[in-house]
Length: 271
Image (tube, rainbow, N blue to C red):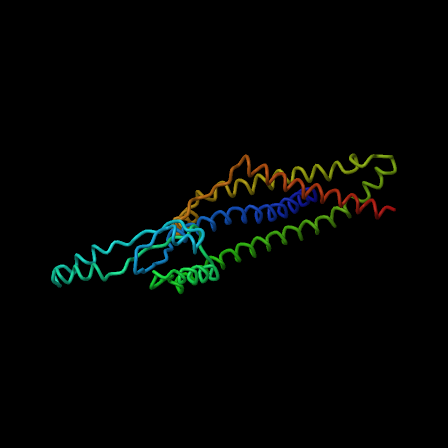
């Protein structure tokens, strides 16, 4: 029972740490996709006295993805039955030029203010619509999501480390007598540490398998699919080979270091 408890506590603590690590990677990709979705959906409207071109705007604004004219033919056609042809011709001559400006990133509030300020230095532009209120609300939601993810992952990582530290103290107590006896018979360090390293290896293997399988099957759940579709982002699934090996390497590093510190703690107490 004590052996099972030893394995269970270490596996749970490693799972908490690995879960938080993979959670950050997974939701970092999701947030990046959501940010790209917002970027593609966000446009700045420009109203100009004369025609604009991309080179002209690029001298003032960097990171421009596109500058497209907004056709006004449809609006003029709707007025065709209400005003005379002569009035329509005059309207066409007086009507300003409309453009949609798209950036290749989703700006924060400061960046958006700088974009608006630089655009105002172009003499031909008479009005700029950046939809600041909508943008600010959307950006705050995006920022909140990022903060929630990091806080949650940090809590999980701290919980895992606390469990590991607690288990380390238990290991020192459980294995102190055995190590002292083996030391009396001249056993070398690796032999004295073999049981702890075995526990560390098996616990790392099991915790990696559990976490990898969880993230592998996560995209198959309906609630996860619906959430991703609602946000307009693609489903992410863990790569069992590549990501699994990374998780195993992290898990082994932590557990082996933990076992080594335990042995060093026992050695220092024996002096």
